[in-house]
Image 1 (cartoon, helix red, strand yellow):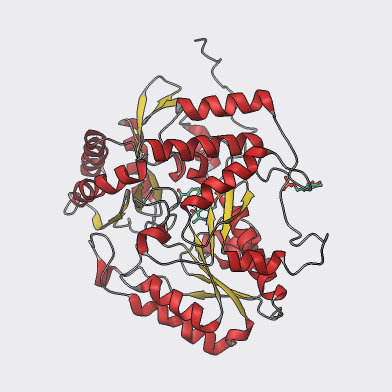
Image 2 (cartoon, helix red, strand yellow):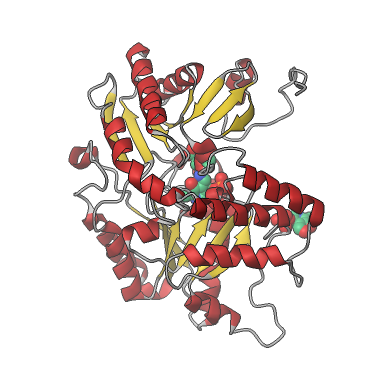
Length: 442
Ligand code: PXG
Ligand code: PLP
């Protein structure tokens, strides 16, 4: 193997969601990856405690996926899917439909979670219009929701930092449910907190305010990931489902993070036993090997739109140049086969109690004010430093990286979501490193 020249100019790449000046003054570069480990530009192995960005669920550089992509690139590098098709697009959609919640077996492909969210919101509007209720245009999101960075996603999203610079041009007809995070009631919950199902009833207040006849859809993450692993209270999602059904409002689950085994089932919908009308996915759909996202719609939603157009007319004026890109589709098929062959969702399910015990052992460590978890995802919330929110978690993140462990942080919350191939020893090392680092941080 020849090593590449050291990069000496970091200035051209304007990095996403990064403190560019801080990073470029002390960069952290990953050069290769295999299984559970990254290798850095200075030759160190780093245990991947975050599956990249919550997306590499089968571990890195899996041979079957690499081979599928390489072969596809040499066979059919690109093919349009506007008024054309290629076999892998249909095969990938069928494979995904098989493991979606019952009835959600129509799949629209995108290239990211953000595009999936935009697509889902547009499908919701198109559905109501197709059945003669085009006045249902309002979209209801939730505080502390993350739905990507498109204008649709930040409008229904509930993260002030992602909205404020663009606040003059957000979608106009949006309202928000309250978030469910409450440490007074739920600190150190293992799995789903007992308190908080009633927070779903706020949807009735919103319906009373706007009238159901104006509301198209409600979108929530079943477990909020980006804003710090917020696990839904017991009964909460079912209550949202019931209220949506009662008022003819579509329920959208944003499963960009929860999709594909993170909770020990294919989807969070399956895990919780609550079925939305539309489900967004991305990331682990193809182990993040090629950008890809998707939206699964119920037969009712799909058929209503598709049967409403005149014969020969395009039914939904929406799509991306790269919808069902051949390389992404090949990676998706290989990834879904791998998940099944290795039983990775079941593995995540079986490991979850050990993961839970290991993360909850951080209770009582310096600065730790909450630990929460579900499946193979966990959050550890730290007390913030006076006047410097986020600084403490950033320091923990940097020190963990220096100690050979990659974690994520958001504000002062540490987030953990290892690939589903993680071993018990690696789980112990992950949280052991965090414990050691916490002891050194002011
Ligand atoms: N919806 C949800 C629920 C997500 O978590 C998106 C949509 C947007 O996906 P794209 O592919 O457009 O980024 C996401 C993405 C983090 C982090 O560490 C989380 C995401 C992306 C990057 C970082 O919190 N989630
Ligand atoms: N901008 C221009 C000028 C385009 O021609 C297109 C697609 O043809 C787009 C944006 C959208 O790109 P994509 O289909 O990759 O989302």
